[in-house]
Length: 276
Ligand SMILES: [Zn+2]
Image 1 (cartoon, rainbow, N blue to C red):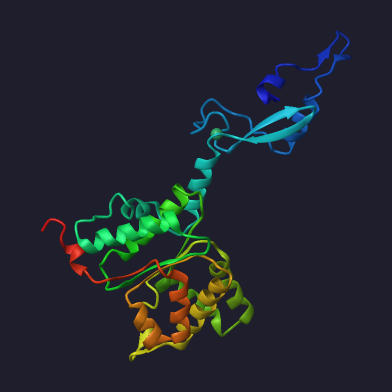
Image 2: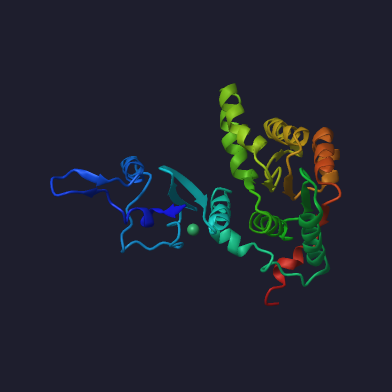
């Protein structure tokens, strides 16, 4: 195969009367693709991260009058960036919540990280992980670090479900329109590696779970359980509390999804140690 630049060195050759005496068989294909906008003219002022493929991930070549796209060596990097971009976690949060920034100067934090690394290296398909316990123990931090590693080190996608904000969006359509409700939860049911952050935050009213919250989470979590979709959980409620005080069926599903990669977190001093 030749690159387009190579091919286009050879124009059709015409005689003095304008008759074509030698045909470049690729020219027609090239012009057709150019008309269709599939080949963009490069300008010297444009800056590309990858000069080989102009950041498209593919190099277009022409062979036998047909065009082919072959993956560029930068494609995997582009895929990682695109997966990170659509996950729902901002670049700022990725920078803040990584394994590098996760301090392991307490026993609990060291255990949290050990569990995370063990999970990443030994999990089977569909296996989840969960950190349960008090706010301020680094649960969100370690879970976002795991999410990043899933994508950057293992080439997998991941998605972020912020309980506080997403639950409100789903509730808004829940009883008004069954089809919209089904659409609203479809994404969360079907994606791989979903991280549900702060499960049941503000869901309790007078010591009881609000029925809408429970119904929505049951629909999402139970379907993920049945379909073996890996789910990461963080919650300020202990797993035993969810099972005994919120909903036994849901609690036992979550247990089955995360066991043996689950941990209770209590050491809220971890966050105050900095600079102390
Ligand atoms: Zn490239």
